[in-house]
Amino acid sequence: MESGGKKIKIPDHVAIIMDGNGRWAQLRGLPRLAGHREGVKRAREAVEFSYRNGIKYLTLFAFSTENWQRPREEVEGIIQLLREYLRKELPDLKENRVKLKVIGDLTPLPEEVRREIETAEEELKEGDRLTLIVAFSYGGRQEIIRAVKKIVSECKNGTVQNISEEYFRKFLFAPEIPDPDLLIRTGGEQRISNFLLFQIAYTELYFTKTLWPDFTSEEFKRAIEDYSRRERRFGRVGKGK
Ligand code: FPP
Image (cartoon, rainbow, N blue to C red; front, top):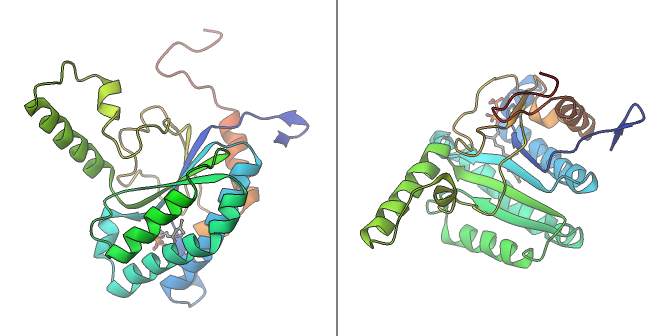
């Protein structure tokens, strides 16, 4: 990707908090679900933008553990949208060598939906161009607690020697995925909302007021350009100091 004739630095892993669907719909006098529906179109656009521009991992926050408390109609609507997305996009994702990984606590989902997710993951397992990670019924604290519980049960077996950062990672939902380089949040709020708490220790943050249904490829490109200008130090002394 180029910007003003200059090559720009592409992050390997981009994570997105897709906020603002409800407000987008409200502004148009539409039900909230219409905003989510438009949001799916932008999710599709973000996936295509990612594999076309050499992003290797894209994580989308589709539904948080807290979102279960929304009205039943909205919850069911979002689950339905995810199912439709998986069903309709599967051939296209496969053709473009996209791998799928869904992270989160899927136990509250109907058996049928869980099976559909598994089938889609299986169907796309050979993808080597982009890995799409969909966070669904996901919470960062819950992920950490789940890891701790697993480690405790390993300890009971007496095999654990040293709980290092590397060892801890093995118990996250997707241990093989590197940490995000860039986290984008649309919709104007400047917070993390329990997303990838362990993984974003050194991630660059980008906040925009743009509501998710308006976050086109143009806007995505702007976020990448902004990232490209940043100097990442990972706690070390910067260049030229
Ligand atoms: C936040 O907007 C958005 C959500 C809680 C749901 C996002 C879900 C999708 C786009 C559909 C499923 C995803 C995929 C990958 C197929 P909000 O409702 O909190 O907006 P508001 O802050 O304006 O109320």
